[in-house]
Image 1 (cartoon, helix red, strand yellow):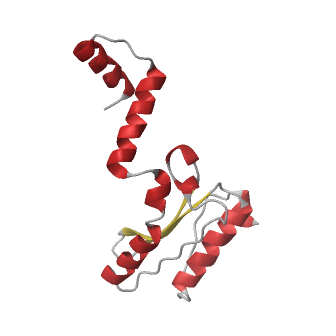
Image 2: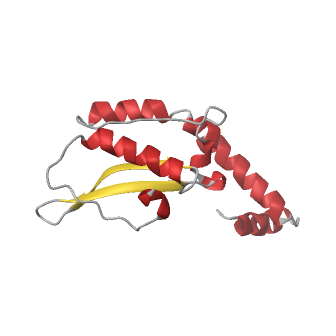
Length: 139
C-alpha cells in the first residue's frame, strides 16, 4: 500500500481528506507495528549471522557497528553503500563470496571490506580481482 492509496481509501471510506505527510506517517507506523523499527531489526543481525553460520558450514559472518549507531545506517532512510565480491567458477557460474554495508564508498569502508574479504578468502592460487577503479579501492 502506498501513501496515495491511503489517501484514496480515507476519502472513500470515511469521506475525509488527509495530507500526504499524514498518510506517510500512518504507513510508517503500520510498517513498524508489522516488522518492527529499523533499530529493532538491526539488533537481530548478530543472531542472523549465527544461524547463517550454523546452517551453512564454511560461512563466516563478521559484524562491526559504529559505537554510536547500532547499524541503523544500513537501510532505508539511513542510506549507506553495499559492497559485494563475486566469483566465477569453471562452469562460468557467478556466485557471491561476500557482501558488506558501509556508511559510504570511502577509503575507510573499502579498507574494512577488503580486510574482511582477505580474512574470508585466506590464500587462493590464481585469484584475480576486477573492480570499477574507484579511487578508494586504489588507495
